[in-house]
Structures are given as C-alpha cells and as structure tokens.
Image 1: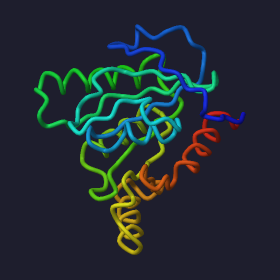
Image 2 (image 1 turned 90 degrees about the vertical axis):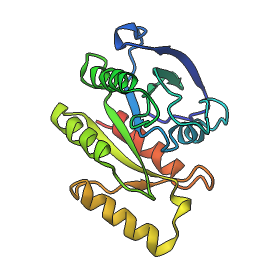
Image 3 (image 1 turned 135 degrees about the vertical axis):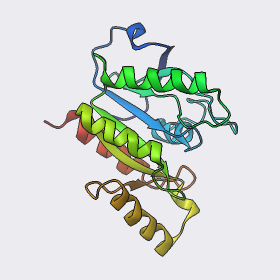
Image 4 (image 1 turned 120 degrees about the horizontal axis):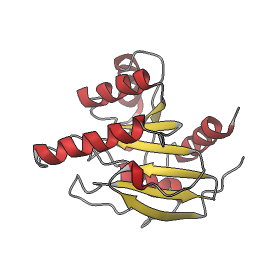
Length: 196
C-alpha cells in the first residue's frame, strides 16, 4: 500500500488506551525523550508544520495523541519521557501510560524510538528497547537532529549508537531542517506495516 501522507487528521488525545476509538487500522507509535524533536519530526512526516504542536519547553505531550494517516494507519504520539522538571508522580504516570499501551490489546505493530544524535541512546532509551524486545514489539531506531553533526562525526556517532543498541539495527539519521531521512522513514514505515 502506498501512503501519500497528505491526508492526516488528528483524531483525539486519550489518557488511557481503554479510551481508544474503534479504528481497525495498523498502528505505529513514536517514543523518545521529551526534548528529542518528536513533534518536529512528526510534522515533517505529515508535511504540515502545525499538525503537531511544538514547544521550546519539553514535556508538553502528556497524553496518547492519535493521528489517522490516509485512512490507512493510526500514528500514536507517546508522552516524552525523562523530563527532569516534571514531578516524580507525573513521570511515573507517563511511564505507566506508555507501558500499558505498548503491552495492551491496542499495542502497535511498530515503535519508532527517537534519539538525539548528539547524545546517542540514554539509559532510559536502552531500557525501552529492552522492554520492547521482551514484549515482542518491533522497533526502529531514529537519530534526530542529524544536521547538528557533520561528516565523520555523524558517521562515528551512528556507529556508536548501533553498538550501544546491540549491533542489530542502525539508526536512521533524520533532520527536520534539511528534511534528511524523512522520505526514507516514510518508506520504512510503509514497508514494516504493509509488507507481508
């Protein structure tokens, strides 16, 4: 199936996956630290600047935000984790919300795990990846903000990230400024969701 990504609509925000609408579509989830550039990457995927609200203050996504893409798939924007200024109670709530969704009856077929290329995978990223492996959920590592590093530095960091994640998957470098990797990411999503 070919997705144009041109007909994306926001469906709703939910605080619990039991509030999911009855939409029988394949799902993809997007996870990452609260300052990883998740909203900007989603806007680049959708080809619409204001579709997902961006903020200079991290930690703005606090619910599961659902987007329908071309009537073919449901994209679920997860709360950013690791937001230091959030209370421990809020952080625990977001973690429980994410884990419940990713292991529940509505769990996605694929999770995009976003990591800032400048920092590589943090401990919480590696914990998420290990947890996804245990749950049998497929994941794809995405290196955001790749325009912040150039040439050899970028290549070296991508190799380091691959090794830190066990050496099985190499992260796709993306940049919302240059649009690097956006088309490749769209193609990977379509391949993962719609190829038998």
